[in-house]
Length: 168
Image (cartoon, rainbow, N blue to C red; front, top):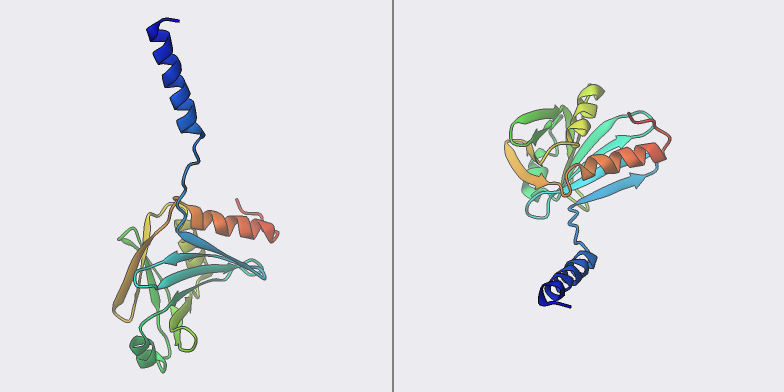
């Protein structure tokens, strides 16, 4: 065997060994799948999280922003309405126009869209967005990213299909 053949065999063996090593996959979005409610959890800065959910039986779309500062939530507990705006990729906005603050185990804001088509459009946006931020009561939180791309949307689609919903 000549020297060139030996080098070629060594390179092929090294390439085969390198490709046999496991690939590390980073997933930074969690799934919600409970009693016909499907959703995705995105992690904002400072331990805050954004949950987007859909009810598989009536397609109502809702969101919650958890671990908000207690002083903001406590100051807003008596407000009749706290709209929550999602900002996708820094420019596209949609507002869940009916919302409230809740204090207890976690300090959070919860909201939903009166026009359900707007909520469904927000969920569709998860398929292609790179980042999402939240605004409520003049405060901005985020952005959160999703890795791999579209994983939150795929979680929701898979959950809906497992609950008998035909997603096209």
